[in-house]
Picture 1 (cartoon, rainbow, N blue to C red):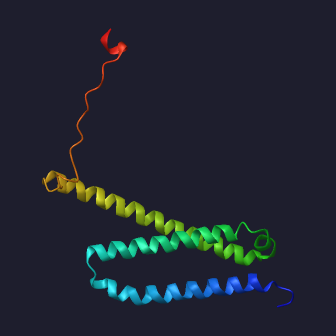
Picture 2 (cartoon, rainbow, N blue to C red; picture 1 turned 180 degrees about the horizontal axis):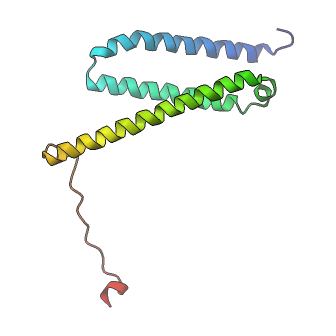
Picture 3 (cartoon, rainbow, N blue to C red; picture 1 turned 90 degrees about the vertical axis):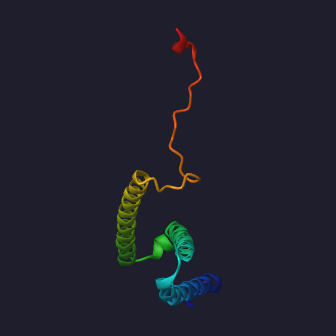
Length: 136
């Protein structure tokens, strides 16, 4: 390997294999999720978040490694930067859309009196303890 440490090269190869396996798995599961119930969809989404966070953490560490920083061509760095910014934009747009729609939906349910009283109680103003400044 031209003096490349076998451990480092092997680690990179194993990481790529693992990521490809996860990619294959999500492609298979994706079809099954079309008819999944709400709980299965939430579990699948949370599992995806875990993989995303793990990958992002590893990528961030990767881009802090002096060996990688020193040897990665500008074109590769540019591709990563552009794609990460696109992912960030997509996630922000999804978050804004989802949060806004859910906010509006629970507002509608509240107006119709359909919010679970076990999970949602109207916020009541708690009595405030008198302080010296309020009693004078």
